[in-house]
Length: 450
Image (tube, rainbow, N blue to C red; front, top):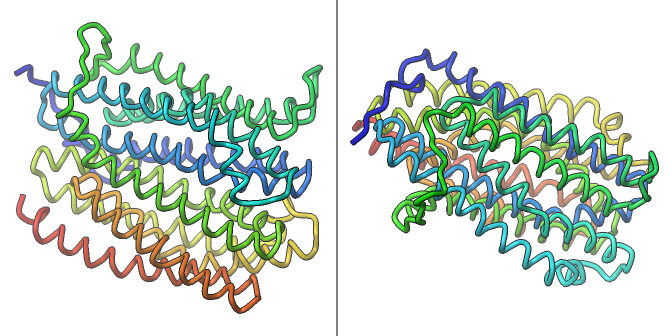
């Protein structure tokens, strides 16, 4: 078996290592959040119905991202473990099978974009303008999803070997491309035809495609620990099962989130399209708080997985504690912003006074659960790194299905849309309690016995 040299995952100080890996990813995640917000900002300039159309498409977009990221988490965890074991052939097998899975995922969404996009919108609303704009937007994002799937996969390969600064460049290229093209394609500037919501989708997929090519280039040029070779490659059922042992629970986590968003949209649109628009804006703004924590978690997962493979429990414990502290601090900043300055933030997207009041209530109430969420995100990422993705799945189901939807539905019966927002912090507190119990079990039965 070909041996590999020691990796920084097993030698560098945990705090410095976590920052080395996480900060570039936190920056790239913030950039992702920025161009999501910019996308919604320009769409909101068209009309509230345009913003609602993009919001109703969000569950499918979130599902695409979730499948790509969930598969990437499985690749990341398994690849980092093989690196810890210093098995070069196994590392290469994981990488190539990960690329193969990205291809299969892309094909599924191409089929959906062609045959299912309009039906998806017709299930949610009877407003023709929203159906037409939303169908155009979602079909383009789905049919051209190869950029998204390959970008995330190639980026995860770079992250698994500690090359997070390089992976950040691809994210920046994609984000900047989208930000520049959005106004040009939406409003028809610089000689480009005015395409409205469809223009926002085209700008998004062009950015994703460029980012995927950049990340592929960096893998081939700089990622010496992984050798991507098509010649002689055959899909391995064993490797795919190992990737999905961690990846499927992560994918289902996102599927659960998409079902939750879909359900919440159905509850809210029964009140008004404005309520759905508020939820759309909230999810975009929430990403500014959540994305840095996701970046932190992405830096943490390969460290924990590597040191699990190398049987170094103290490094696992210290990394998890450091990540928890940073996540809680980030969430406290988010709470402060949403509590103290909700109107200036919302005014970027919302002009109607009634919608503004609804949005202020939503931001202030929902953000009360952010600290619980930060802890849950870190511990669920630890579960994934330790091949306990099913525990992360249990927590997400409790947070977003068992918690949010039933509570939101019951509160909607009061007839006051602002009562619905309380479902979110209640569900976060429930998920937090379950997550702590599960982590205590993993720590006692697995980490402490390494």
